[in-house]
Image (cartoon, rainbow, N blue to C red; front, side, top):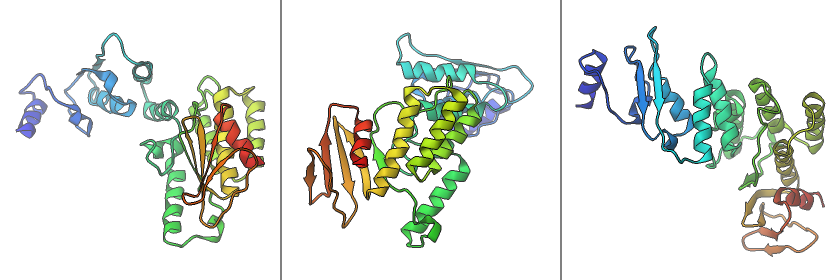
Length: 277
């Protein structure tokens, strides 16, 4: 029945089609020139973009109305603002960049965030995925023995390169990629100096982003499998057959192979200091 209704709408027998977001999945009706979305504040940025793309698919001028209540969250308003302001050729790439910056960088192959391929680019995503598959099969190449595989969860703060700091989206993507590909703290320090020379003093979000990638590298060098930030504490999960000797007040659980540290200071800075000891 649904197929018949959509077909009648396509042929012009129906003037209005009331439906769910199912139409975002590749429905192409050139004669449709007006879209009205109810409760648009409930949808993600990529979904709003796909819905908007259902109209304006011919030479006819099109209109898209996104309705939302008076009181909505700040993040919802930000998503709607992006949809309003991002139009024209290349808007898909712009929205992918905005989506990544609004949600944070997430984890590459984990469950913290969907749409990770858009975050780091298809080429890098494919390289990491291929390398991870080979590693799982025990087919690690000599050049991949130094793959940084320390996981970090629950990172506090907002880790992004703001558009107000680096305006060009392609340049921001390049910087994200270079950070992700760095294999030493010194390499990240050199990149940070380069960024400061080119764009001026970096804001707090950028400094935290560099600290995040430094933490991955230091965790890998110290044999840390995973670092978890939760409830004012930092949990270091150790790899097999590894004893981590740290100075200070730490709680070591031999069975779970975890080291727990509670702190009132900035968690990211504290974790870095611990691994530098």
